[in-house]
Length: 432
Image (spheres, rainbow, N blue to C red):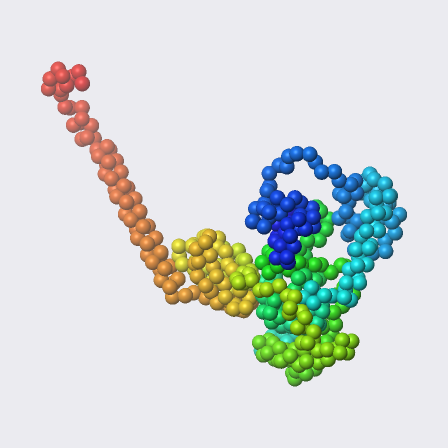
């Protein structure tokens, strides 16, 4: 919880808010905000006088979730639901809270039509769309980021909707626009938002929130059954299907890289078309957007996907049905792979040490990729193990031979005759 608020504080700070405003927004002290902005999270036991809270405050997440399902939910019906789950308070404070929340939702609904320049972008996936790769029918998707003010879009076809691909598409979209929007509105996919059952509310995925803190934007979630809040990007999906697709001949046989090149050229033509409701082109309106965008950070976010890897006794790890070799020193160890969906490569680490970089083969290819260097290291390790085993076998044979000789001596009757026939030569020997 502390880390989550820390990232939110860093986002608000990058958007220009002062410490006092951040403290009021997050419900914490100015000192806490000071620590958050320096990557410090206090996890010790709080002391001092407890802050007074409304009887309704523990039930805010439950009420908000019910309102998201039905914005016009009757207060009496909601009060009955709260009582069934243990709410001890009265109707008055519930009515006041419902009134404030409904006013907030109405302001958001009005804001949807009056998006300020650089304020908001909307993100969505289109697809899946099927295409032929050789004799195999595969899926691809289209990432869309659309400005709420200028209606200018960035679109890109991908082979996956996984989180590393999502973040990589964000980075290219920011570069395309030349900056970052203050907030971005998302759908309810698990790569973007997760439901916190303990607090009974939706939260941005931890990695998406770290990404947002790095670039300074606020991730927002589209409310359930409220498609009008994302109407702009939904129209961009329809425009893609009914305008771009018919312009590409035999689109199911076009490679994704080539299709993205055609898509960028098509987007440039779309940007020059006049929007009838504004009597301006998207590119002309984007000039106001650009003036209000947040600057890009000097360092890009590491969007690579972490993959746990286990090295077997043959010195290989398996990833998506393909086997890859590593040096013999890592036999039986657990490694971490950082997979980049853009380059198709994966950096394999043992702790902080880079083991190697592998070129990934297509999933399902069932290939066994062994490099000459790894093969030599495995052979040297085999030789070393063989020599050690031979030495151990030789030592065991020597010990066995000595025991056999000793047993033969002990079993010889002459040994006992010599032992007892010897007489002491002096009184000292007798005493001994």
